[in-house]
Length: 77
Image (cartoon, rainbow, N blue to C red; front, side, top):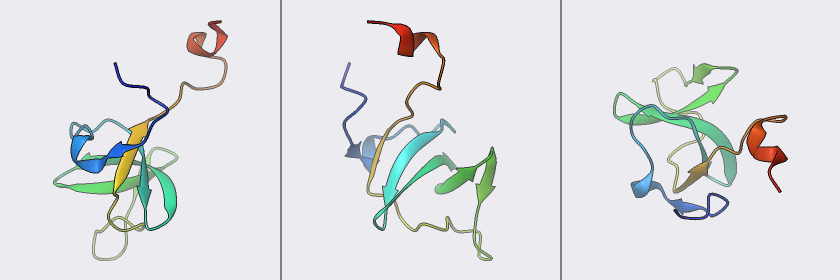
């Protein structure tokens, strides 16, 4: 498996609604690909502009979300 800490081209990102970190227009955000486009996610809600487009623009890279604090993955040596 590829190193999850590395950024990958957006073309290789999951398009099944999985939340991932994306890099778009110089910013990093949590986003998901739904209904044919990337949408930023804040507190579990999609964040769109008035036209229904992701606020941050078009992502160029992505990476998996890290495990949440206190998860078993963080406790492994």
